[in-house]
Amino acid sequence: MKKSKTAIIIILLIIILSVFFFFFPLNEITKNLPIVKVFYRNTVLEITSPNGKALVKIDGKEYGNTPANITDLVAGKYQIELRRESSSENFYKPHVFNIELTKNSTSRINIEIGPGDTLHGFLLFYTQDNTLGTNKGKLTLTSNAQNTKVYIDDEYIGVTPITNHILNTGEYTIKMEAEGYESLEFPVVISKGFVLNVKGYQFPIPVSFDIN
Image 1 (tube, rainbow, N blue to C red):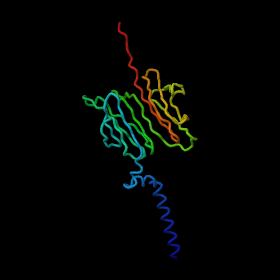
Image 2 (image 1 turned 30 degrees about the horizontal axis):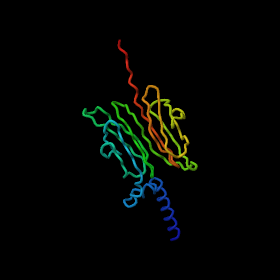
Image 3 (image 1 turned 60 degrees about the vertical axis):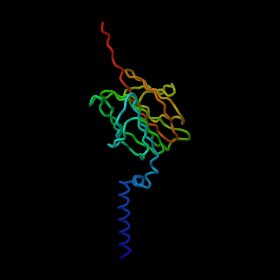
Image 4 (image 1 turned 180 degrees about the horizontal axis):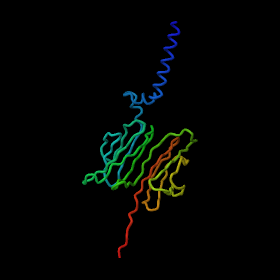
């Protein structure tokens, strides 16, 4: 009888622990323990905003103004809010970006904020991909403008969206061009075993009218 009760208790404990770790993965629990947490703080988030300063909030917590170099975040998904400073209240609206931080990587947001919904710049972050071969990485790229032409080191590779484009590891220059929008050019690094995710934002070119 005692053996039956013991077996039932063990089975119930296994079920309870299985359900608990299904909803609360062990990795998520351990990386938030005070002693262990320091070993997970190996991600970097760089945020810049050319031609102006912007207040940075991450998941609702203020991190000062741009430029910001944040190194105390653990790997995971975050919501970044940028609000450009202005002497006129509410002249610039806040903009929210969702980004995933992967351990041993540096993510970047370089965004110029204009009036209304206008943005110019890029957001990039890495996600792991263990299916890649030696010295290979991938590039996934989207844009706020439709059918944006994409060039890597001046070589045309297609129009957005670009998905899982395989490249050798190393440094490259990406150029994005779309009709009616300002072009965008910036350096990137393709890393072994990672997908580099890039979102480009381009200012619309102002329309001018000739008045005779």
